[in-house]
Image 1: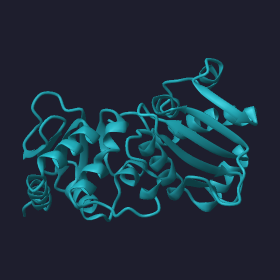
Image 2: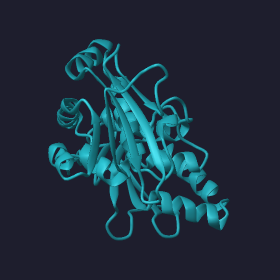
Image 3: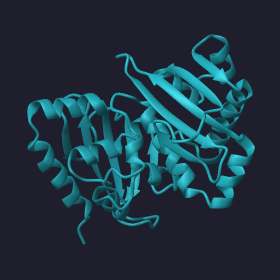
Length: 264
């Protein structure tokens, strides 16, 4: 029996071929990566594997076979899950969190998989989680991942996270163009909530201002939160002790689900 993924990749190619040159260039600029897909027929140990690659770094090409040279990211998944991703039954962020996709390479690149699908008219629709994103901000992928993480926890587990943090965070993040993205994270009430912009009727206990890159580095564990505060990379207004809790929460999250580490 043929791989269902063959039809998916063919449809992606057709959609890409229909792009105007500027549209293709915009997609390449936003993704800037080479993906290799190792697709297993099923989840059995000796299942047949077929390989495709998507070069979305220079020209924007999707072909059968291994990526030329070293891909920026290699994704390992079943044929069924590849189809689920493409038709929108499964988001990339949720697939990573629930270990339905294995990966070799940077998680930040893997989280751009949904960008490719949506740009080509496939993938999950932009619902409440998709509305968290801002164009031109790498932080958007992190925020989406955190929101998805909250969604896969039980209500009791979410309440436990809220009880540990007990704070409302407002993030003001600037990119290299001078644009500002705003998110609010309520880890003080109910089961927790991440929202684009401010939450009506809710006052932040702490406001953090930082550059997009520094925000990414903080959440990926590349930057120590306390050092970032001391060196002025992160400006804090409000309850300073909550900033330390944020650092701890991010470290706990990384240990639990390995957000930003290769899973293979």
